[in-house]
Amino acid sequence: MAPTTRLLLGGFLTLGLVMGVGRFVYTPLLPLMQRDYGFGPSTAGLIAAANFAGYLAGSLLTSFVRPGRPRRVAFRSAVVASVLSTLAMGLTGSLGGWLVLRTVSGLASAFAMISAAGMIAESLAKVDSEARLSWVFGGVGSGIAVSGLIVHLAAPALSSAALWIAVGLVSGLLVPFIFAAVGDRDLPRSDKPRDPRRRIPRPLPFWPLFVNYTCEGLGYSVFATFIVAMVKGRPGLEAMGDWVWIVVGLAGLPSCLVWSRIAERIGFSAALATAYVAQIVGVLLPAVSDSGAAAILGAILFGGTFMAITLLTMPLGRHGLGGRGFAILTAGFGLGQMLGPLAAGLLVSGPADYATALVASAAVLVVGLASLGFAIRMRPAGAAA
Image (cartoon, rainbow, N blue to C red; front, side):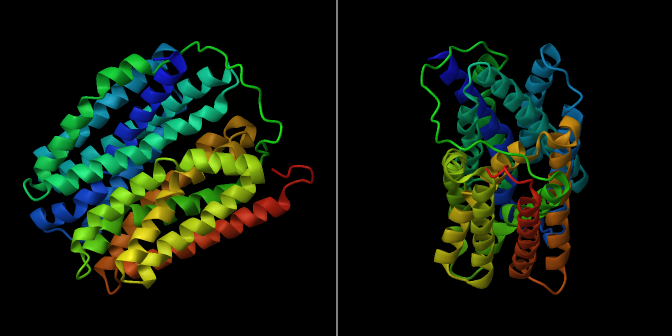
């Protein structure tokens, strides 16, 4: 295997393990856990919020890890912690235990993702191949799809606890290859000339972009947490719930590559705004229609945008605040995604339903889109990408 391909595959599998599985397998398992343990939406939202709180803390702490050996040690420790915290979810029925384990999982996913992306991006930058990083983020979609399929196929025979253990064991099989493939690498330079038609990202005013990305964290997290439980709770659609989540993963698999190509043609800001519109429609569809077709189309639009929005946002804001833009943007996103499922769970536990929670989250995304439009409008002339 060529060195660049090996590194990209290692990153792809890393994000599949720590994000697609470690972070998001809770979504298809949530209805089964509610069946087995009898807790309601407010507890479900609390468990999800614990994971997102861990991710927020991990995102901030990762900025203190130095490149080189400290980063490699942090990366490997986080990958192992992600696998073990997933597996251990099946070894306890305690809410306190779940909250601790999901917090650890969130910490691990942030450390592993940011460390892996940093090492891979730096290796690619040395050979002018940064654009190939978009291949790595497809791993999130693959992890969502594969873990969702495992849950769907094994649910008739296994309890939710056994499924947590099974998914953790399957994830562990990837660890040796990930350790061997991902690190600081010297890669061969590509002879392919750069396409002069490609647009490059130009920074946006930071604080409107910060508001935009914080709204994305809150708005996307409600769909990402509750969509399977919502669809399974509708008469006649019980069997479709798992497939909706699998479709989210399949749509996410090529999304970063597709949107990066779109951005290089129409500009990063225009592509980001278009992705927001598509995501808002995707979030609203299962809220305004009870049909299976609306749920599947919503899954396609949501899965096809949620990771791509992150990929498109970072180059527009990462140089802000004297180079601290990446950390501050991630903190805002992390705060939003921690509050989203917590607020939605409390809302659904009261007089509202999941459809109302999705409409509210779509409204937050509209606010984010408006803030993005303001940022684009305020950008200095000559910075049009």
